Image (cartoon, rainbow, N blue to C red):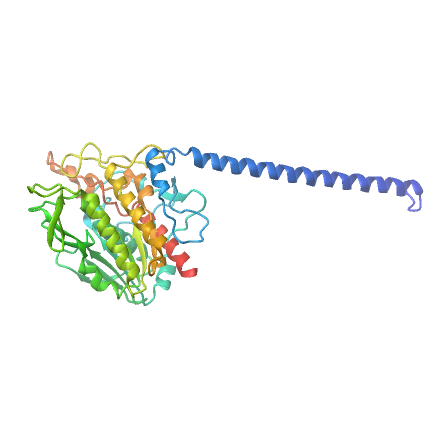
Amino acid sequence: MKIESHNPFFFRKHRYVVLKCALFLLFAALSFHIFLSVSFKLVSSSIQNTVAESPLDSTPILQDLAQIQPQNDSSAECDIFVGEWVADPTGPSYTNESCHVIESHQNCMRNGRPDTGYLYWRWKPLDCELPRFDPGKFLHLMRNKSWAFIGDSIQRNHVQSLLCILSQVEQAIEVYHDEEYRSKKWHFPSHNFTLSVIWAPFLTKAAIFEDINGVSSSEIKLHVDMLNEEWTSQYKDLDYVVVAGGKWFLKSAIYYENDTVIGCHNCLEKNVTDLGFEYAYRKAISLVFDYITSSHHNAFVLFRTTTPDHFENGEWFTGGQCNRTVPYKGGEVDMKDVDIAMRNIELEEFQKIVSSRNGKAQTLKLLDTTRLSLLRPDGHPGSYRQFHPFSRGNEKVQTDCLHWCLPGPIDSWNDLLFQLLIHDVTA
């Protein structure tokens, strides 16, 4: 039946339907708005509760550290150093076969390590995603630039990781090494980029009497008031620097100031006061920060925080082991007292120099690898610092629970480094 458009009943019914539809849409929009508001509050509350109740952050030790946790001068909305390790089926961007600069002690797969699960994790900050290191973009930004990693063997470990990642774009050419192959320099000819590792385990001047296996013939003579000229003589030629102290300060040493013995750490000398390693470490870190921020040379400097080891049931030469195959979760592990002491010193001295804004303090940034490294007991060579260590019968095997397998967790340090670099370049 045809309804005539001039029918009055048709117009009344049509207006009623329109009004009903309008009221329905208004009610639906209002309900959706209320739903979103409540949901957002619930999600925000959930996130806050998750952070507040995180076992790792609730650890008394880390609560104490958080009280002096310095913040880099950055507009970033996310703290990339706070997070967790999450499963990553994509795995590393290189292998021990594609990269040819891995030292034998860190080449875990070549040395026969049977498990590979430690390769399939990535660091996930709590409030954001951490992009992977982009070797092409890095080399483009670093054209005609120079980098140096200054410190001990952990720095050399870190440099090898960086070289392996960059090898996806360009293979570096080694252009220098010292007699013991501890200090090295590489060149990327297509980008005129140089990358160095400078051996300076104490950062300050030191006479070291130790062989390549870590066996000492005499106590170290450490000058806590003089920086190591091996790196300061090159500093003016560097555009970017990563500097770090570390475990060498735990070794037995005689301390000197003004070329005079003032004390020691764990020494056997009579009539010499044991000042503890904290004294020398604080002096060294303070001296380094003062040098960097008062220098007329405007280098961009990252200070990397201390690296916890994961020795269990002993140490290097006393049967210590690290046989775990998965990362820790928050709350499952605490830092050792010596690591807490070192980290406290690092953060306190960093905060002092940044707060004072002395000279060019803004060029000094914190590369805080401590907490994410603490959660990775599975990433060390362990017994596989040697080639097939158990093929020689009952021969005693030395384990390495300090350095990192390559590929391995240390690759994530470069993701952090790249993020800090990108922020600085684009700021």
